[in-house]
Each structure stands twice: as C-alpha cells, then as structure tokens.
Length: 330
Image 1 (cartoon, rainbow, N blue to C red):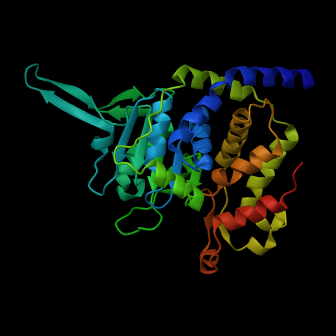
Image 2 (cartoon, one colour; image 1 turned 180 degrees about the horizontal axis):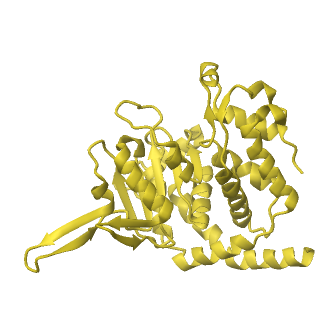
C-alpha cells in the first residue's frame, strides 16, 4: 500500500506542476484573496459549480474573469435581472428569410466558464433554465439538445445585503453548487496594497495563460486516483450524518436548530473536494486537514435552519464549527 501511495504521489507531482504557476498569476491580480483563489482553482480541478457570496467591491467578478484568462478558457458574464428570460441564457431560433428556415442562435451559456452575476435577481423560470444546464451539462433549444462539454462551469455571485427585488434560490439549485464561499473584507495592509496597485486610472494587471484545458482534464483523472483511507471516508460520513441528527452526535445543544441536514451529495462532494485539496498541496493521499479545510464550504449551504436558530441568531457556520470541533478525527 505504501508503495502504491508513493507512486500516486509521484504522479501527482508530475501532473500538478502548473498549480504554482496558476496561483502566481492569480495573485498578480487578487491581493490578499488566497482563500478565494484556492477555492476557484479547486472548483476548476473538479469541474463543479461555485456560489460566491459577499458585498460589492470584493473582486468577485474580477477573480472569475482572471481565472478564465489563465486557463485559456472561453468566458461569458451574464448580469441577472428581473426581466431576464430563459432564451437570454440558452439561445433561441432565428428565422432566416433568405432560406425560409430557422437557425439556432446560441446564448451565453455556451461557454467554458460562465459568471452568473447576482443570480438571485432573476425569476424562477430563468433559474430553472440554468439548473438544467448545471445539472445535465446540456441545453435544449427547440427540442434539440446541445452538449456543453467537460469544461463547462458556472460561478455565480449573490449580494447578501440587498434583498429587495430578489428571488431566493431554490434548494435544489443551491445544492448543485459544490462550494459556497463567503468573501470577507481584506485586512488594512492588503487594502493599502490594493489601493496602491490601482492608484492609476490606466493601471491594470495583465495575466498570461499558463494552463491548457487538457492539463485540467489530465489533473481530474489523477485526482480520481488519490488515496483516501477508509477511516477518513467514515469521518466524512460521520460529519454529514451529524448535520441530520445532531443529538446523536454529541451536539445536543443544536438539536432544535437544524430543520434539514445535508444530503448524500454532500458526502460525495466532500470526498472529491478533499482529494482535489490534497492535489493542490501536491500530495497523493488525503489527510484529515484536507477535509477540515474544505468542509465548511461544502456543507454551509446544505443545512436548513429552524426559526428557533434564526431567532437565537445562530448561523450555519456556528453549527459547523461546533460540529468539526466535536466529531472525532480518526
């Protein structure tokens, strides 16, 4: 077994050579956002969707655009508004008078990395259209299905402070996002660095493409082979099970706080994300720290709190911190 793990680690080292280059390019634009850049790269490596939550001005849009530039990916940004229609995302049929036939005009979802800006401002029918694309990785226009390919990835943003004129995301759609990231303000030193860097009106950091899409696909194959021990798999199951029945898992004080716990999709994503996090560290095996590092981002949007929890001002992050502190690490 040790020999097998050594072989996997050697393979990981060979394939993950682009990771430092990628993070270095992102850091040229993103000051003090190591948490955000690591998670964006993590989502890219797994090929799953990400939900970003934070107040305006924290470089959410800039970070996604920069990520697309560094990996030679086609990038589209969609500004979600209340008057948006499904056809604005998917595309539609256009009549051609010369030929007397209908041509299909593809929408902005036909891209590699799609930024869905302020996703909670669009009505339910638009969110449903996006859900099909996210879930099936295909789009249907006029009864004809189009494959979106292996590189398709949705990164959505939402603003937590303005709730007027917004449509809360359905639970099914929120569950489709592998990660929900809470973006916080930079420190004083980081903000000073940002201010100095952006002091000129013509100042803009140029990044170069350092990764090919084929490199990402190769990395995904290697990530699947990364070793995770049975005890760590049990640890993941115990963490997720504790969100469904906190009283049975030494979290009696939160027994009336959780209405619905995390689904099995949480276990699947946590297992895959832990492997990808190990790959980011250029390791061929998963350690408990990998699971703890990424666990909050996987679980925070999969737990539905009761009115009692909201009345006592207890957040999902509060419950998850207690959960990670209580559940025994193998």
